[in-house]
Each structure stands twice: as structure tokens, then as C-alpha cells.
Length: 93
Image (cartoon, rainbow, N blue to C red; front, side):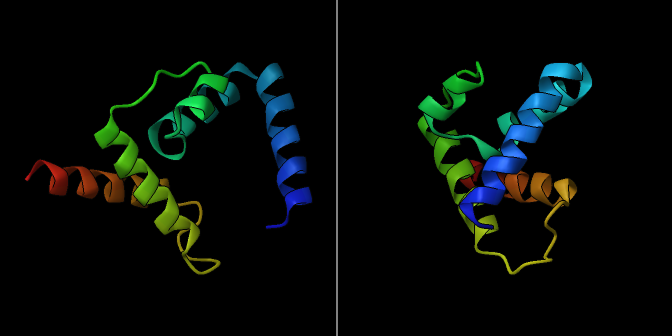
């Protein structure tokens, strides 16, 4: 995805989040659960910093998703949750 598309989609999402509370809540839940791991990025959305272990797990997960071929489970949040849970269980073992 090129930079211009990211800017346009991000602008649209932020505008919608200002107007639609349910959308805002859902967006923040998804960002909090999977996407944001850097302290400064999380602070932009009013989210607390993560432990170093949580940061490493989320960063690894997001980076692996960015390397996936187009059309591979792109919007499958259940797969995302399963992958994150699996990463967590491996760390706990």
C-alpha cells in the first residue's frame, strides 16, 4: 500500500472515529490488542505502555503479518487472535 493510500484511509478512519463512538471503540480495541507496541504510538491513542515481553510478541506478530502475501487472511481477526495467543503460550512455556 502506498503512502497516499495510508494517509487517506487513516484520515477517513479518524474522522469516522470522531463521529461514531462504536467505531472508535472497536478501532481502539483492535489497535490495542494487536497493532500498537511502541510506547510513543500507544500514547497517541491514550493507551498504556506494554511490558517488554508484550512489545516483543506484538512486534513479531505485526511484522509477520506485514510479510504475508496479499489476500492471505488480511481481515481475519480470529486468526490474528489465535496467532497472538499461540505466541503468548510459547513464551509462557
